[in-house]
Structure formats: structure tokens, C-alpha cells
Image (cartoon, rainbow, N blue to C red; front, side, top):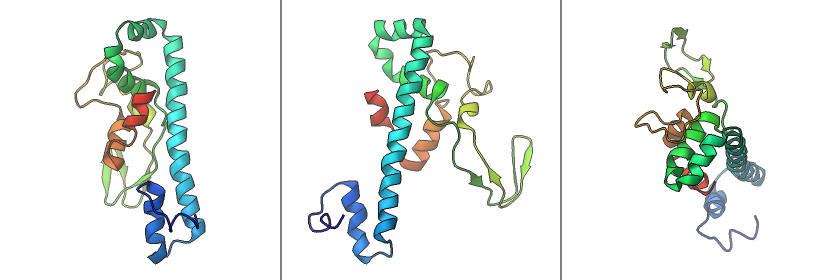
Length: 164
């Protein structure tokens, strides 16, 4: 870390280190932040590859379909994210006002723990949700995790998914 501020690049780590000279973040805090960024991206990518491989091997008809028609890949990636995505649950969300989630009242300050994998199998959102269908198309009914990530950080996960 000490050598990077003298030779800043256009990478994320250089960007994080640049304000460090004028920012109250300690070197330990920066190391922890950078470690979390690397690990978080790595774990979800590895889990998506592993889960997708297992799903395709246990659904040979879908694997054959994908082998026959590579143009299905974008739909296949979205469907695999929905069917067996790398994220089981998201971080807790805290109510900023009294509200209702489903039929459950949630008071200001209370936590709600979204279970992404359950939302992705919701029959109200997906037709035949427990079936893997690489040809499945949807307009606004994409993987709940994908919509969540789109709100949080744009298409950060998209390039990693395309390489899998």
C-alpha cells in the first residue's frame, strides 16, 4: 500500500488509496475494505459457477439445450441466477417507517432479512418456479438478486456472469 500512492493508477485500489491522504480511514481500515471487495466478488462468482454446474449436470435436458443453441446463454445465465443463484439471503433492511411486508407488520427500526432464494422461487412472480428452464424469458421478472444488485451497484456482476 505504501508504494501505490506514489504511482497511482486508474484501478479501484488506487482510487481508494488516493483520498486516504486526506481521509480519516486508517491503513487497517483500507486493508479490510479492499479485502472485503475482493472476497465478496470472488465468493459470489465461485458460487454461481458451482451452483450452475450442479444444476446443469442434474438437468441434462437443459444442458443439451444449451449445447445445441448457444444463443440461449443470456437467458440461461438469468435463469441460473434465479434457480440457483449465489446469494441465499441479502443483508438486513431496516424499516424507516411503520410498514407491512406481505401480511406482516414491520415497525420503524425493525429488521427484515430478505431471502433471495425464496423470492426467486415465488410462484406469484415466476411460472413453475421450481423448474429449471434455460429458455425462460421474462421482462420485469428477473432474478430478485439481479434486481437488487442493479439498484446497489449497476452491472458490476454482469461481466463476471457472462464469463461463466
